[in-house]
Image (cartoon, rainbow, N blue to C red; front, side):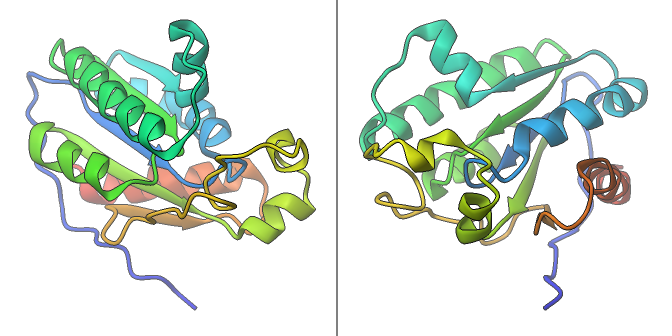
Length: 182
């Protein structure tokens, strides 16, 4: 099935950075993709930093993973990204962040917001042993015991079925970014 992307163009405010919000299940390839697209985004749109939900959890010593804590963290991460983009620095943020409330807040409050959804099947992620969390008998895992709220209208959707090399997937992301940013 070919998924329709909601690829309406995004008019960029040149006085602010762009937030590339990469979301998807843990193990779907968000951070790998962020790393692969960074240089191209920097060349095209200026100074760019990569952050991930995992990085911020470590830096800020955030240890709670229940649904409410995840939602509150996501809202805080969103505010931090806005703070950085308001200083004309792009942010590529890789985060599970599968809550409609966070993404709606981003669309409403962040001028240069590009939502990228890496769509993956959790069974394939687990089969490929992409993330240890699926094997540690942990609780509060999005997709297992916390229902994910998958994006309904992301700007860009790419499917990672683990048959394509990540580099090819990142080229797909860049090509779609080039089609929507004006």
